[in-house]
Image (cartoon, rainbow, N blue to C red; front, side, top):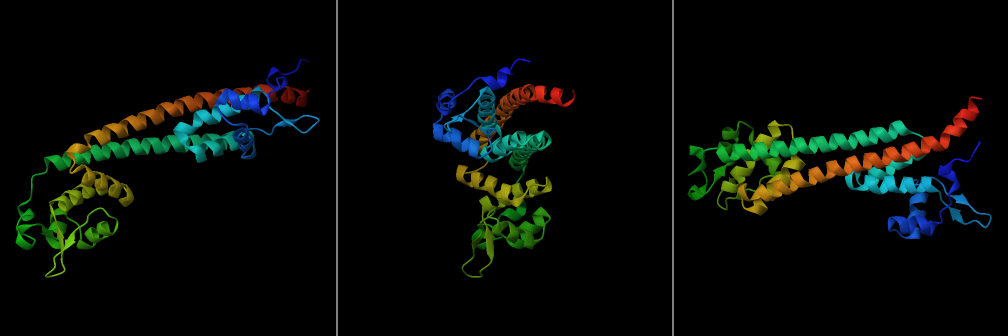
Length: 257
């Protein structure tokens, strides 16, 4: 029987490094981390790699943009341990997270549209000192929530009311009322406080929801780029799995003889 072409070609660490624009130390580090299969050794103890290692490195570098370093590393380790189901589970989790992020973006856009169409409540004016905001009670009643919920949102950084120097009561300015309404929309959609806090911070930095159009456009672009990167990573991972199968096929046939 002829030798498997996937295991006959010898590559030095420098060959693998140059092909991928890496240092030889990076290649050795990837092997030590389990991202690459274990290298062969010459009689003098030098590492030797094969085209299979090149495919492994192709797969890892393709997985990085869509899945991140930690998940891409875990995927490759699972494959190299001959645990493809674990690798596929990790891939599925990344896709599930991407889907959740898309849903969050749609919810944010919907909440901002609803916020833009909201007419100011008569309670908005004249509630705080000098008619400059709302106290916690009236705002909570308007939103249909408890005052304790507003205080919880304050601790999460979603709203930042000031204190009236005379009474010590919280006073919610127009921007706080806007952020509380936005938080209320998103909480009804089941979104976590930490995610909502990030959004309201963006709204405050932008000066309101209208300038957020560019932020939302960039968010769309990043999700699209991640989705395409996951497709590229899947193709490279599939190619690596094919090469591993081709390498192992003779052994499986010998075991059934």
